[in-house]
Image (cartoon, rainbow, N blue to C red):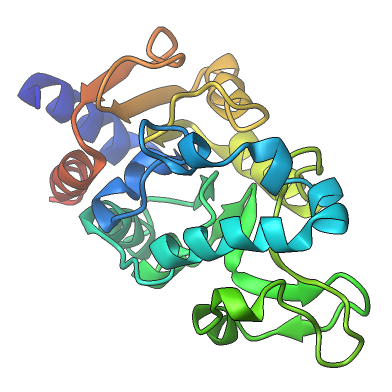
Length: 249
């Protein structure tokens, strides 16, 4: 990890009035949640169009739930790592206004972050596609292949997680709140995301377009590296705690 880049980023963060963060899959890898798109990830074993669309839920719910069981087996036991804890610490200290995340694992909230905007929903919430009834996430953890597809006890329709499947729109509330955060921000920390997925990748550009600062934390160069004022090429679980320590000292 380049010390000069870290010190520069910490100085920018310490001087900012309203900082926000944008996070992606890379921030949760140390928690045991691999990027679905990475080699060996879930998209190596499943066709997203066959298991992660509403059409698939309607036509082949068992197939979708086989995929969801695999996702739950990875996400369910995961715990926050030092990267999540560092962002929660920055928020608690008044140095971070909020987090926009592309992740569905709920680890920011588990680490103590309060203002978390989930672009793609979360696996900690489930609802019936028929009657809309909420279902306890704890029940999902105990499901076996004999129990799928999970059906609502009240109406018999299929139960699904409250995540954004391919082809579904980002929730309007998330878009509105993230837009408000970006409008107020003078600095954005981009951590663990390639910057290739819209509309999340537009947020750093919006902050920069208004004269704000972009701090990137990624293992390697990304689609946002050319936009960043400072790039720290290191694991999020290492770089974010170091950044928070320096910015708050």
